[in-house]
Amino acid sequence: MACLLRVALNPTFERSTVASERQNPSSHCKVSSFKTKTMSQSSAPGEKLMRKCRKKREEEEEPLGGDIEDLFSENETEKIRMGMLDWYDVNQRDLPWRKRRSESEKERRAYEVWVSEIMLQQTRVQTVMDYYKRWMQKWPTIYDLAQASLEEMGKDKMKKELAYLCFGKLEVNEMWAGLGYYRRARFLLEGAKMVVAGKDGFPNQASSLMKVKGIGEYTAGAIASIAFNEAVPVVDGNVIRVLARLKAISANPKDRLTARNFWKLAAQLVDPSRPGDFNQSLMELGATLCSVSKPSCSSCPVSSQCRAFSLSEENRTISVTDYPTKVIKAKPRRDFCCVCVLEILNLERNQSGGRFVLVKRPEQGLLAGLWEFPSVILDEEADSPTRRSAINLFLKEAFHVEPKKTCTIVSREELGEFVHVFTHIRRKVYVELLVVQLTGGTKDLFKGQAKDTLTWKCVGSDVLSTMGLTSAVRKVPPFPSSNHRKRLSLDVIDC
Ligand code: SF4
Image (cartoon, rainbow, N blue to C red; front, side, top):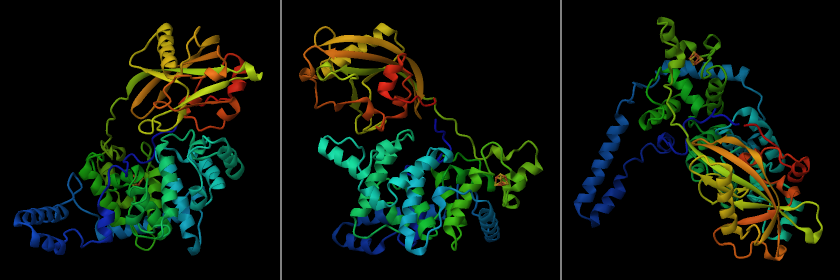
């Protein structure tokens, strides 16, 4: 399972104003538009706006808040920049998304940074490497990606076959399968289409990048600084750790004001001549030497500027790992899920294997828009007969599949159970295999089911193995019969 290594602070949801302020430092209070407005309106809204501007100015002039008392001094800033860049030049890891590109290939570099940064959110570098290489082989430029679709299985058979011929077997969801947080893949695709459809080419500043679907302040900062040399900061979990230790900040990094102040510190440090390399050096230090539990301070290029390190040297009861403050996460809620791998035998066509029913998840929420086997969520643990009743009811209502009335049960067996942990849910999953033959033949298949409320399809085992099924679906335990296992072609992935 992917572990939460990167982006403890989700930049999409906890935006700071630093980047936009840097773009236009004098634009906070638009006096001219205020004047125009008051010409035709009473003075009350004008006064309100003045008060708002005054408050905003005061807020900007406030000390940093929390226990972040001040910014780095000029001398500290200079030393940190120099130390970090020298260290990075020698020690940076050789990663596939760090290829140097020429001036004329800036957009390509921007696309590569974008894809890698989105993949790296919530996912380990080691896991991302293979995904990244496969992705770039298939869609080496943003123009290639913009031609793709979210999933290979179009409703129209001709279109589907054409897609196979033109673009190969896999599409975005399929390529992303196993990386989790599938909304990232959807937004990446939508963002690529948006950029390619626009008239202005690839946005080359953080402020304009943030207008693209799925690009938040963190990703915008990474693309703008690394590909386009704009001096804007990036703040992810690794950067927060390094900054919190450099300044010995013990305030809660998830707190809104503290989070904003981390952006201010990062903005102050970023090197104007090599912003991309500097940002990457901070992230790299956090990912390697300045790790969560075993920092290697003796090899650190900025240990002389590190307040946490000097405090720990002065007082042995203090450890650099006391920073940043650990935020206790809420326990994930528990629920239970019955999954029915429903195989429909089609004896009319004399096929050896049947077809499997898949249901599309809603377009919003957990695992939005992905395909899964028919399943029912239960609030509490239930015994086998109760689970079967729940599945029977669902199959009857959703698909008109009803034992003895519309179908004959060929076999029904429990396949096992496993636990799948999402960020906020700990789900115990029970899996059964139900093989049926429809009494009225395939013409009665799903007769009367509510197509409007549920999107479903039947696929052969060959298609199933290439689809972008979620890793929870792929965890379905091995079938007792190797024949079934072969027919489904599912791999069991680690828990
Ligand atoms: S001295 Fe230690 S704690 Fe401080 S930044 Fe370096 S590795 Fe991190």
